[in-house]
Image (cartoon, rainbow, N blue to C red; front, side, top):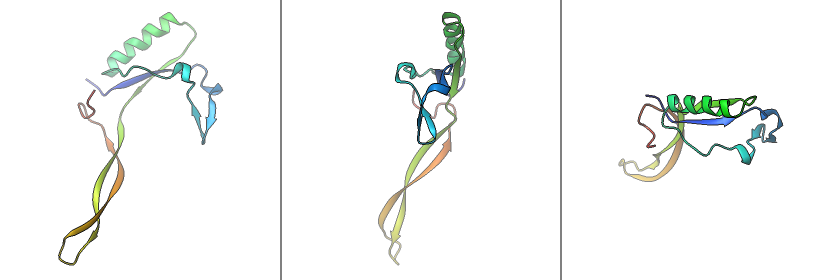
Length: 100
């Protein structure tokens, strides 16, 4: 079993609108389904390729996720936490880590 996956039709990716140094995916072809595994997504990519010859369908598997945790930012001399802040980071996604 693998992590959740998305399929995206990327045949015209060079025509997508530039956006902050990236490319914005055309709203008409944005993914609408999250597949539960790479195997399911690959099978669907094959089905789509058969239904739409000449188009290219890419499978994207979730491997990392942004995650934030609260950490103490101000502590008294006695060790009491008086303020916290959110600290962002990236975490590896293991099987079953994302609840879909």
